Length: 136
Image (tube, rainbow, N blue to C red):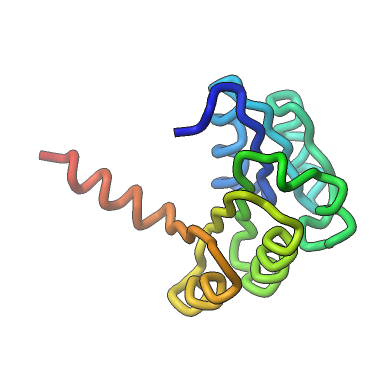
């Protein structure tokens, strides 16, 4: 469970990333959202503590974010496995305490775990299990 008024960084503001960022902010946490897509950033900027149009796989961008001071960094870069791997590598190198990455497939997850202590999640599978388990 996250501490009260924790600070989170969400890299990738597609459907999953933006929903996650908004929900964390609704719980009173400070959330910084980052995406290359200006429209994606504009859709969430009023809900978050800060929202940046920037490349979350750019080490110079990430260096400016005080990653060690964040409770967790979420990486949700859709089907962009290469960018997701690069972002994860930099986030780990820059000292993030907890790194959670939206996985694309088993190979992507295996590569991410080889980089270091990374939690890989598959939101669609998790939701399918939840719905199936709660139908009856």
